[in-house]
Length: 135
Image (cartoon, rainbow, N blue to C red; front, side):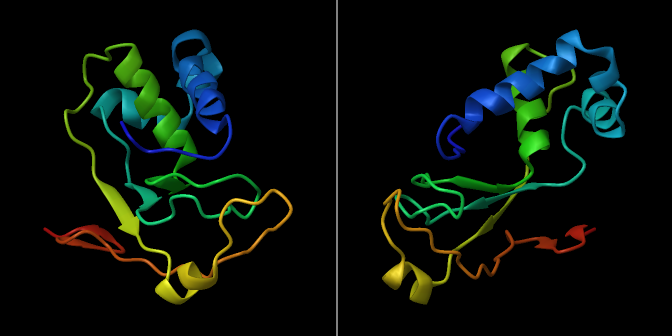
């Protein structure tokens, strides 16, 4: 799984995800119940595909496939993969977005002293709308 985040966020997400195996209260949330029952998230996570090296609004260099939205869903999926959850689906849909070219042209490369907040537009994968998969 090549989806990334700034700094040590993936360690934090892995900790949250591992609570599925050790925390009954976490397993009883609607999201955990859905994902453990269906082996997939109820909605795709959102990933920026062209953010490599750009400054994240909260600091740190962004990754090639930068997680934008769906932190808990990604945490749970990563945990289900690591623990070999029996109902885990083989494939998972993600929505991708591209940071606007005009922003990338002037975006600072990772510099801990500079923070730039981009205006983000999105591009959905073929066959999807903002309401989800087409029937």
